[in-house]
Image (cartoon, rainbow, N blue to C red):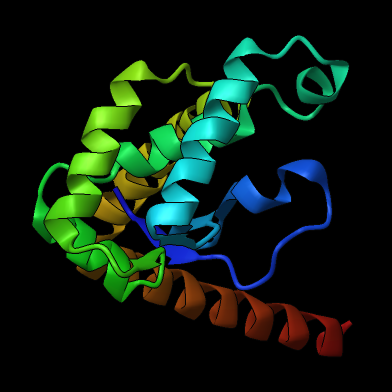
Amino acid sequence: MGIKLEARKTATANFTGVMNMEMVQGLLCAKLAVQPLNLGNASACLLINMAALELYSETALLKDAGELPVSSYLCVLGLMMSQAEDVRKLRHKGIVQGLFGDQHILEFFKDLCPNLVAGQAYWQIFRDIEVYRKKRRLWLAIYKFVYKNAKTIAAVLSIVGVLVGIFKAILSLKSHHE
């Protein structure tokens, strides 16, 4: 679909900065920037506890912070993994790191994600992807038309250029005679 996945280089300073995800639309393709995750025993426990706190907390802090940023982040990462090869690709891009093996990370997400509730950030990413997909369809149609008709377009533009040159010459000759 033309969406590149990349690890965020810098974290933001707000509450949801650790779990910050952003879809950036470029000229030729879009980028989905995701905070890198270093997964180990301690961080896995911390993530599970943070997600549980989000689900069972009624504090205004979480409601104002984008509703369930940790759960949304984990759900998006979980959707990117269906087999160990996907984890290897995410490691290569610097999105998932840690001491766990690829299969262990895959099992962690496959066990955890069905029990999570996706929040506002999760749905915002999907809205952004849908908007990009619709815009991309238009650009692909234009590209396809230009690619299939390149010779005709070049010929028409050449003829128009020649005609403009002839008309300019006629107008300049006409203005010199008056």
